[in-house]
Length: 154
Image 1 (cartoon, rainbow, N blue to C red):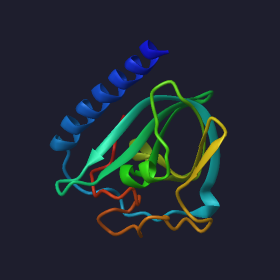
Image 2 (cartoon, rainbow, N blue to C red):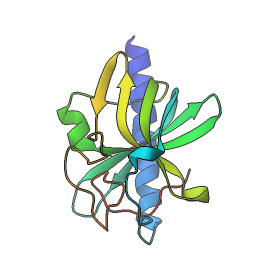
Image 3 (cartoon, one colour):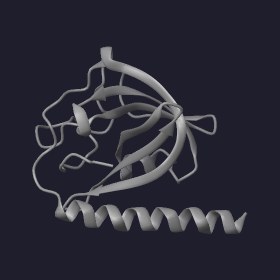
C-alpha cells in the first residue's frame, strides 16, 4: 500500500515538474471559446497524466490526460484550490468518469469537465449551464480552470 502511494506521488511530482517547464516556454492565449452544454459527452478511462497549469501570480489549474477505449482525451478540470477544497485529488492510474463539453479544433481539442467521478464520489465543477462553480471564465481564461495559459498539447 505504501509503495503504491509513493509510486503515485512520484508520478504526480514528475508530471507537475515537466508541465511547469512546458508552460514556462508556452506563449499565446487559449482559444476564445465558451462552455457549450449541447456539446456535452461522457467518457470513462484511466488517468495517464496529471498536468498543472501554473500562473505567474500563483493559482494552479489542473488538467488530466485520460486514456479511454477510443483514445486519449485531454480534460481541463479546474483550479487546484477548488479541487482540494472539495476533498478531491487525482493520480495516474485512477479510473474516472467525466462529463463535459468538447471544445477547440484539431490539436487543441479538449474536454472541459463539468463533473468528474472517481471511486463513487463525484466532483461537480460546473452548473448544468456550464458556469464554473468557483469563478467565471474570462477572455484570458476561457476554459475556466482558473489560470490563463496557452492551449495544452499532449
